[in-house]
Image 1: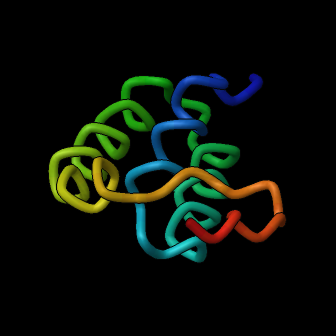
Image 2: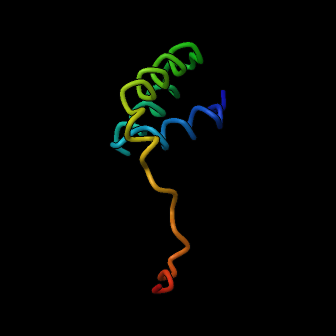
Length: 67
């Protein structure tokens, strides 16, 4: 069973700990339960909501022009 792309996006966006994301996805491979995965995603989103909203998108690597 493949991991839902939206679930992975939400985990990466709202979770501060990349190891936790890996653990959740690894456990999903063993359980094969979408209900379990979405429950974990919901908890991560609710607890990480302030972090996910404030997280800056990745930059292009260029320095901004001075004003």
